[in-house]
Length: 257
Image (cartoon, rainbow, N blue to C red; front, side, top):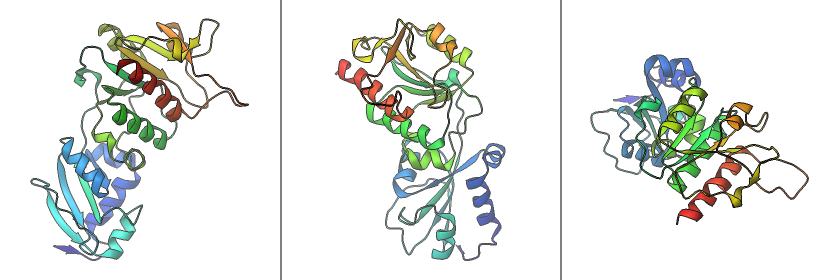
């Protein structure tokens, strides 16, 4: 079946899923744009429900299982697509649960914890770091976080689907980490704070990061095993949270390799 009209009910629903977090949560569905992103969603065992292909552009062959496949015209695709160079494919997938109790961590785990998400793009960039470093989980201390926001998926270049993800209240995240005997290493400035490069990451570790606007809360500083800082040699005293995450995580990886 080819869809040619922007007034088609399916196309209208795609736009709702793209634009409104409430629709994604109510329907339990989300949108994935791009060839690589759809391939990684399938690889990550996300269930495809509908696939929309612009045959003028789409050049790949992906096994979408039992998903319904529709073709759409180029004008319809260009209305739906954020980027025109994403391979002519848009998928609709079922969301997954992101509860802490669903996380299964190995021994000597390496975990990224974000106290809050200021911008979807930052979360996506942290997920990309998580994939590159093969961390064991990315946890957000906010039960309302929308992992399936299109901006998160786009900025993560699909690595949302290759990471183990979870969300929960900060108190529950702390209890979870402590129950797994994971050392808590927080980016926080106090008298006892030491350099990132003086910290032992060879044992199970969770790296806790705050937002650029407010930093990390006293809650995490008061419940940490170590407080760390990244040496700052210029005029500003902080980095973008995704950059800070990458520096900290890859120091942990360097020590473990």
